[in-house]
Every structure is written in C-alpha cells, then in structure tokens.
Length: 564
Image 1 (cartoon, one colour):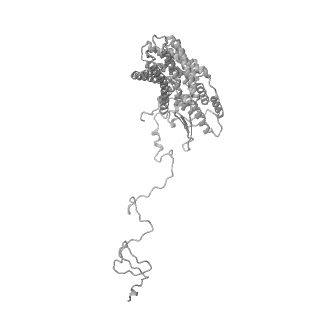
Image 2: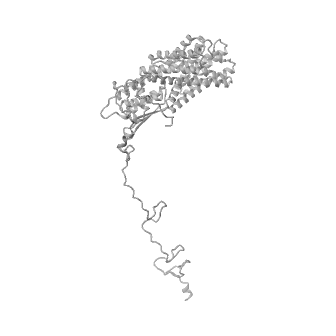
Image 3: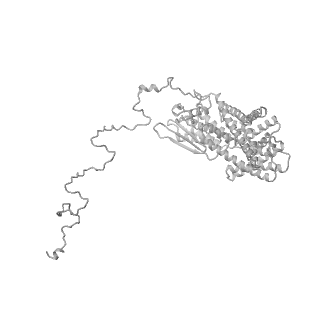
C-alpha cells in the first residue's frame, strides 16, 4: 500500500478511542458505531422498558400485599345532616328526665329585659320569632330591616347608651319584623348585624360606623319610644313609617338653646363650689369661670379642634380666676372656685358607661370608653396644672385645706346638690318632663352621702358607692315605669358625687412639688369615680331582682370568663 493510500480518509466508518470490550472492531451498520463507557456490556440482561414510568415512591404498596378495596364514594353531606351512627331508639337518652324546658317571654315586661334575656341565650334555645309588624306575603326586606336596626343602634350609641342596651334595641327591631337568627355586635365605633335565613343559606351582614357623639337624651328617649312601638304587637309600624319617624328624630332640634347651656354650666360650677364650702362670691366667680370656659370650648369646636384640646382650654378660666383672687388677697376660698370649675368638666357620663360595659362583658368597648375618659382627664390636668404652675411662680398661696367644708350646712348643701343636678340635666339635653325627677334623685343621693359621711363618719368611698347605688336603683325603677332608658334618670343625679375636690387637691399637690400627696389625692379621685360607676350599675342590677324578667328561669349571666 502506498503512502497515498495510507493517507486516504475512510468515509465509511469512524474509529473511536473507545473500542468494544471484546477488543474487536464492531462492524459498521446503519447506526453510528461510536460507543461510550456507559454502554451496557454484551450478555447483560436488562429488562425492556414498559409503557408506565419506572419511578416508584416509598409510599407505594409492595407487590403481593392484599389491600381491601376502598369503599364506594358517598355523597357529600351537610354539617347539620343526621350522622350515620345515629339511632332513633337512643334519641330519648339525650332528653332530660323532666323534658325540655319551654322558654316563655312575658309581654308585660319592658322590651329591654325580653331582648336581653334572648341575647344571653344560645341561638338554638331562643324561641321562634313572632312578627309583630305587618309586611307583604314575600316577607320583610332583609337589607332594609338590618339598615334600620343599624341606624337606631347608631343613635343610641352616639347618645351614650351602653353596649348591651344597644344590642338589645337592634335585636328587638329585627325580631319585630320576623328575622330570626340575628346576631348584633356592638363596639365603641362599629355596629354590625348578621342574619342567616336558614342553615344552608348564606348569611347577610351589614355594618355601620359611629363617627360623632352627642349627649342628647331627648333624642335618646325618642329612639326608645320608636323601638317600644316596634316591639308592641298592638302598634303596627311599617318599614316606611319607621324610617319616617327616624328621620324626624334626626331632624329634631335640641330642646335648649345655646345660651341656656352656657348658663347651665355656670350654675353647675357655682353649685359645686357651694358643696365644698364656698359662699356667694365664690358661687359667682366659679359660675363666671365655667361660662368663659364653655364659650372657649365652643370656639375651639367651631375651629375643628379635637375634644382633648377643648377640655384643656375649658379648664383654664376657672383656674385663672381662682389664682387671680388669691393674688388679689381677696377673702374668698379660691380653691373652691377651681373645684367648682372642675365639676363642670369631669366626664362622669363616659365613666359610668365605660364601667357598665366592662361589668356586662363588653370589654373592648369598656376599654375604649375608659381610654377616652383618661384622655379627657389628662386634658383637664394639663389646663389646670399650667395655670396653677404660673400662679405658684407668681406667689399665689393656694392652701388645699381652705376648700374643705368646715361645719356642714345640710340645707344649703342640699339646695346646691339640687341645682347641680338640674344644670347637669340641661347640659345633657334631657326632656323637660324628666328634669324635675332627676333633680330630686340627685338631692336624695347627696342626702344619703351626707348622712353616711358627715353624720355616720363613714369613709367617702363607701358613702359614695352607696349613694350611687341608690341613684341607680331609683333610676332603673323610673325607667322601667316609663319603658325608657335609665340614663336620663341616673347620669345627672350622680353630679353631686363627682370627685372634683379630690382631683383639684391632687393637681395642686403636683404643682407645689408635693408629688406624694398629689398622687394620693388623685388615687382617691379614681377610687371615688370607680365607686360611682360600680354603685350605679349595682343599683340597676338590684332593681331587676324585684322586677319580673323575660323568661321562666332566672336571667342567665354571661359565662365568658369561667373557663366553660
């Protein structure tokens, strides 16, 4: 073979550095003869790949293991369907020996008690609704009924009503139009109500936000009257009529003009100054300071400032007048002037409502209300402390003992307590027919407090709690007699019991760098405030023990914190 032939390329087959394991050259065929070190050697039996994937799982069943076939597919049932293990023969074992008690709701008790009783029952134990309002054959318009209940609840909550009573009113509206399985929910600023038509239908839920609060007890009484008419089976009110009446309630003006409210704030502060030992000049000075503070607060409200700054500004004029009288060496009790101005600002209404919500189990709403009270109180503290600090720097000799009552004057103090309750009722925009009753209730509260504290030498906290309990008892009885809310009969009556003097003593001690005595007085003020709120609520609960309630059994308390 020549060199040319040796250099001739071979086009038929390509030699590879990796040859067959036998050492021989594999014959050329139609496929490429190129081999790899990963090729399967000749003579090695390899199973042919099947049609299914050879990938297996560690959870796969081994071959030869007998497994029972899965049961036939059962149709999907409901959570309320009868279980397969249920037997009708064993049904009697779940029935009490005396039978299932029948819940009866008497008609001669206020609707508040009936609705509150049903709200505290489980949904499955509530009696079937008996619609007392007429509607067409297609049934009531569910969205409109829910909206009506939310609008009524908004007016009640904005007026200062407790969360439990607001829920009772919303539930009463839904029951009046035949809506069963309704669940109202009330918080500090949000109202919600849910209605489930049946066990298999989707629920309908609506909500509403309360953005503005105004203490108008005349409007509150009108809303209660509307709910009472809706709950009465003899008074048929259609949805359109209910909306019309609700619109009239919203459009109604306040029963007292602005100048009457300003004069009432002055009367309140002057009467409070007399309660702590002031005379005629102190009465006039406290009244003028309170009226100036009220006008400044109205000016701040017109400018859109929050209520925190309104309370701060309103607290400065009475304190400034007291400091000015001290610097002028006037023969008056300047501390009584400042104390009277504080009486007109202390948020007693919000405090009572907050404690009441906490005692009835509405802890979120109670926390929000008490936090609101704390902010208002801090605003008052800042306004008074600022004036007192500059007064002390200017040399004002403010003696806390000068504001203490020397010899009790029962007749004068009872008259002052009546005037204070009267002014408080006007500031709360109460109906004129209830002003006289709540004024007398406030006088009775002060008589009880004076008899226990001054005559019986009992601690002021215990005396305040008992007097507030009497207020709550009489207020609840009067409310049940007139089928109305208890707030107009209790809130203004606790005015003479508010801890105005203890609050001032605490602020004065802090301003004079006597922190220990100041904190002691502020702690006493907090204790008195809690005694008022708890006493009012306890008196209301005691009154219900002597009244017929809306069920055959005793009213069940909420078991929310007992672990079952």
